Amino acid sequence: MFLSVLIAVSFYINPIKEFEPFSVPCEICTVIDDTNKIDQIMKAREEYIRHIKIAKANKKNQLYDKIIIVMGESVNKSHMSLYGYDFPTTPFLDSLQKTHHLYIFNAIAPTNQTRYSVPIELTEANVNYYEDRYFHSCSVLTNFKANHYETYWISNQGRVGKNDSSISSMAYEANISFFANLNYLEAKTDEVLLDYLNKLQRNSEKEMYLLHLMGSHSDYINRYKKETALFKNPKNIVEEYDNSIHYSDYILSQIYEKFKNEKLLLIYVSDHGENINLENNGHGFLPPFKDEYTVPFVIYSNVKNSRLDEIYRDNKKGYFNLENFNYIVQYVSGISNHKNLSFSRDVMAVEPSNIFNFDKLEVYK
Ligand SMILES: [Zn+2]
Image (cartoon, rainbow, N blue to C red):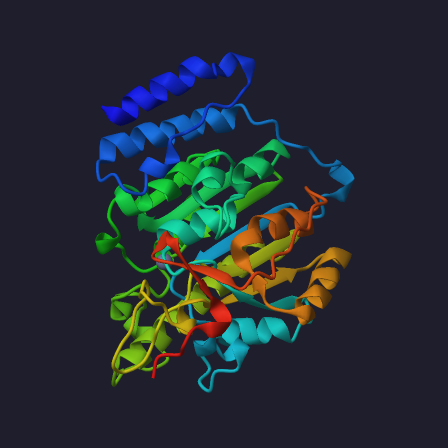
């Protein structure tokens, strides 16, 4: 009731027809536990976004026909051979590195929770200003849509539920959104996304995809096919986790095969990392551990792109905080001239009120 009154008052004070965006009462969203009310807030965000004026880039600066963001899940980069792990968990990415068209960045995730990290990475929300900026900004899907890309959100994660609703709101910014599951507990392996991609009737030359994997979410043993596993008979949970990393690498290889002959920008990133050892694993700890933020961030481009060379040099100055991932994607794609890199060490744990300095976090021992 309180919420509906607030929304009604906001509409009254700032009618949309005047293009003064109303204020979504976002501070409530993190504490209420009522799906219907969250649904109302998300509808208010959708209405707000419809009235944002999106800057359009000069078409000649747009280098790619296919832009594909693969959003991994719970990927700790220190378990990827691409980042120096002892076991060959990422043979495809390792081979792509040899082409010299793969840029390997050092980055940290902004939070250790999916429901905050995915919005922070894809919208103007960041670690220290989450709520207001999330509710009053679009995701990159809308930015690409405004720049004449057909946009797709294709997900193997759950569509409905308190934890996913901020993500669902962004998913429906896309021209086409597809969720393989209503509930993540039902999720099959990420191959379902390949099946969907293969059946998709594609009509547009310029396309932007957000592929949201189940990746390495627990239970790890459910995230890969046993027949092709790196560790056929995993002895422990670490080997099960490594098998899930290995399987995501296979999924990436199939996506690459499908689009490699087009002007392609392929990005692999993760929402957050994962604490992985024999005693303790998972994410969402408070206080958090370093491994919950150490994520991969790699970009493949088969088109020469001086902006990628530029940000690769920038990355030598320090790890990127992926809170501004949305800017990087638009910048390297040529639909925006705002690079706006973040080198912040601030990371969020569990809820927006908990901010830590990444450098001071401990590694679980
Ligand atoms: Zn997650």
